[in-house]
Amino acid sequence: MSISLYDITIPSYLQTLTAIRGVLKKGAGFCQEKGIDPQSLVETRLAEDMFPLRFQVVSVAHHSIGAIEGLKKGTFGPPGVEQPQDYKGLQDLLDRAEDALRAVTPAEVNELQGRDMAFQMRDFRIPFLAETFILSFSLPNFYFHAATTYDILRMKGVPLGKRDYLGQMRMKA
Figure (tube, rainbow, N blue to C red):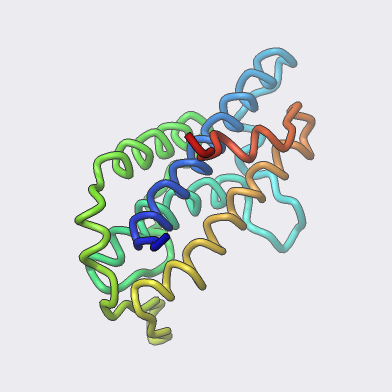
């Protein structure tokens, strides 16, 4: 069985991104049930030297649809400063990312295979091919930020389990 660039990106991004959407939804429900302002979670960090929930969620979107957009441009950098600052805005960001991912066709992604790609941050540049960018940079970052989002909400008491993180698995039909 051969596997395409599309196969390793869009279905994987969608599985985890939709799971994290569900995690945020459970977080909102937990807050409503407990009388907690969900905004109080947005700046929560696992550790003092880590970025808050807000950055984790933004990074899930950025390392999914943002990575595909980066492949098309040939460069990818950190998320922009114009990002949602509230819980609802973070949920909306993931909704938009999912919609954008669902609109990407296999042909669009597969034609990017073998292209030069670079991570660029100011004067710092890391060269990749499209495939190595996805496999060694974008997907690991995507999963890290998704897991950290889950971990922050779990730490705050949201009743989450492994199934919440796994999302809809792609099983043999």
